Length: 227
Image (cartoon, rainbow, N blue to C red; front, side, top):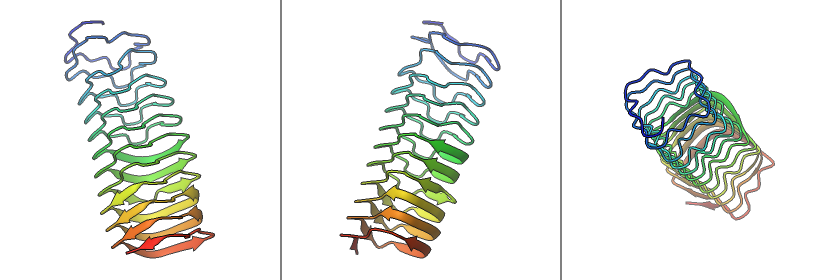
């Protein structure tokens, strides 16, 4: 499909493994349920397309624009989304194990009802994103921006949140186990209900934040700054 104009084409439930999308033009195309493994889409503009229920595992999508796309129940296991733009995308009930989101833009995204293991979100921007009923295991958010987020009933187990910047976010019912939050910044953030167990808060900066009904066990608060 190199150089092809595939605007508005419905590829639902088709086997498109290994297709080369180089220089192809996309608009209003539908890929729901398709198998896209091995496709060439690095750096493409895939905005507002429907990839619900597709298999995109292992794809190289570095720098790809996936703004406002539908990625509902999509298989993105092992996919490289480094530096990709996913602003406003629906990533609910999606398989994200071993996926690389380093430096990606996930502003206003919706992430709901899924379990994620060994994913990397280092330096990613989640401004105004919604995260609900998501379990993260052995994942990393180092240096990520989590501003103005709505986070509810999220569990973090062996997760690296060091140097995360979280401002004006609302958090409810969060559970954090055996995780690194050193040098995290909480500014005007509200946390209502949760449990922190074996958590490293060394050097954390907490400004004008409100933390209520949070149980803490074996938490390292050395050098924490409260303002």
